[in-house]
Length: 341
Image (cartoon, rainbow, N blue to C red):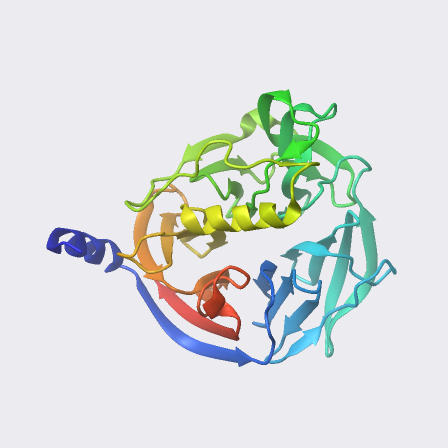
């Protein structure tokens, strides 16, 4: 690395203080990726993995939150989670939104289940944001005729009734049997909601009170780091004739070979976007700290650990990288970092 480049990195990284305060070593073998994770009000990590569909909560030890199944209190392939003041809210693959209340044994089902309006859910939900008057869900769903468009963000009322499509993309061709596999992120930042997708460093921004008007959504380009390497256009489409094993290998290759967003989290004053560096000059990931209000890039920090989630100005990172993609990440070791502005 040149002296000038090293000096530039030091200037970018210097103003933010980020230091380790805890390290959790947990007896749990990871054979797959995180689907979703959050820190609850008591500082416990609640995480869902794709390995065996186990939905587990950590209160310094792992415990299965709920069994997998279709029963009233069960979870079926949970994908997205959110917290209210009193509840853990979980969205599963049966288009059900379920409420759980903290108990001495972890979380107990609170006898509240809502189904989304039929035909208005997603094949796979990636993330969600819950406000006092609406539920925002992101994923990928074909347009009403399967021709030309994919919807990424939809709004619902708190009982699951469909309100509107807020973020969609038009392709201008028949895509009824092909869809790109991507990760999508939906985060609340103050009174705004931000949507991002893994292959573009842009944010779609709208006010959390906006539930009906897609024209109120603004696309904001985010400043790119020097190592940014864009994924080729139309890199991969999954179709009914695609070999599934080859598909997963190819998708993993692009996610580790280009500057894919691996996760997004929020702190008091920062939107934190973790991306792959794909450069021997840096570590595996770059943590990009954007100002919450202006969305201007403020700092860049480098790490070999995978960002799981954040809460109360703390970042939670999985040691060695992303499980399922980085072989060094098969042990359940989590580093907790305090971030001071």
